[in-house]
Length: 256
Image (cartoon, one colour):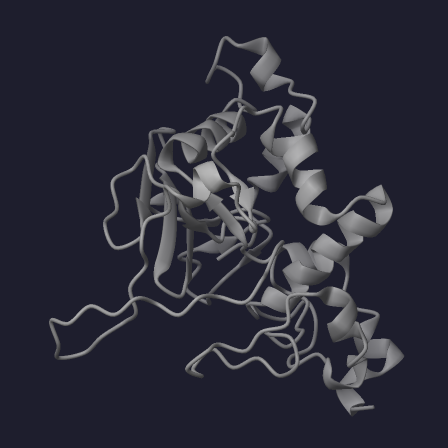
């Protein structure tokens, strides 16, 4: 067992620190290789926990930003165990359905959604040739959702409705999905990201002079959300500039 996996260090890995990427855990599950012809990634938390001797804190917890997909995978496992419900089912029943996000889902997608998926393309240098991005291995809480711009707008409205004066819809402001007070807490800074105090990190967004934003990407896919100080939201979904009615993969369950 590595020295960085002592009870003292691993005990500093809390749920709150996992949420805000300050747990210090290694970024990816053991054996991850995104550069392989077919990316290697273990999305099942139980399989990764069988290799716990390979999981450790790369930096001390609560000292600096350390982006961590593995951390969000473990958070999804916590949700699943506490609810005694598979994570995709829990998200669909407790979050997506109440918010009316009918075009958002985890794989395997229903045929109606799968037929609408836009094509993602691999990165390229000094070439005009387009090659489809390799398919990602199954993943869930750390970024496995497919969605549309319309559904993301519903998600953004749900977040903004937690703030007084944004909406007159009391049902949306006090949604059973998550209390308004809890959503406002999610929007607060957790810690500064640099010594210049130019930006900060929270549980959902990066906060800076330009407002609050969420930037995420996967192979051939990207999703971006920005809210300016005056609460004017801007949404941009891209899967090689697909028309907005098409689903694209949204790593929006994790935080960047």
